[in-house]
Each structure stands twice: as structure tokens, then as C-alpha cells.
Image (tube, rainbow, N blue to C red):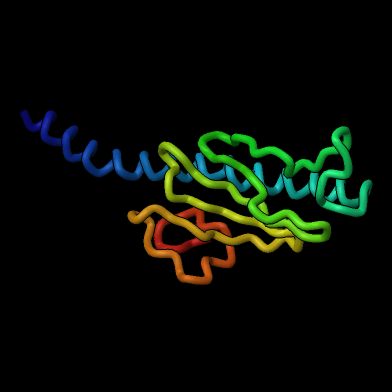
Length: 134
């Protein structure tokens, strides 16, 4: 009986930490996808002098949204000389919204309620831990 009680207590303490650890691991999908898309956007700009699609055959990397793990990666803002990339979580990462612009500025504009409130201006980094830690 004592063994069962000890195992139950250890499980109650370890399970939330493990779930948090797994969730933080999924956030890497978003940050990696945003960094990769930014590199492709800059290469596209070097070749075409615009971030927008030039023709039906020369298409901007931002022309279509894509998936990275549980995140949808898209370009809500796309101009000739600027862009905003966004990774929006779904499923186990619902509530997370990470962004990056053409100057490389990283921001967190959405977090699940359990992770805290996002300031109106957002966080000027990608939040990777509870409590607003980048």
C-alpha cells in the first residue's frame, strides 16, 4: 500500500512537468519554421527585388501557408519590401502565436491562458516557458 501511495505521489508531481516539457518541445516547430521561411524570403528578395510573387511561375515562398508540426505558418502581411510571418498553434499548441518580420524582429502575440496574459504590444521575443520567459 505504501508503494502505491509513493508511486501516486511521484506521478502527480512528475506528470505536469513532463506535459510542460513535451509542449515546449513542440514550440520549436514554430520557431524553426519561421526562421526557415525568413531565410527563403530573403533569398527570394535577393533574386527578385520584391517579396511578392513576380509571375505564375516565380512564386513567393509566402504565397501559400504551410504546416510545421501543429502550427500553421503563413504571411498575414506581404508587401513589396516588407512582410510579417506568423505561426499559429492548433491542437495541443492552440493559443500560441509567434511572428517574425523582414527585419528579423521576433514576437509572441498569443499564449494559452495557462501560460499568462500577453501584453497589448505582445512580447518582443518568442516565449518558450511559462511566466513570459523567452
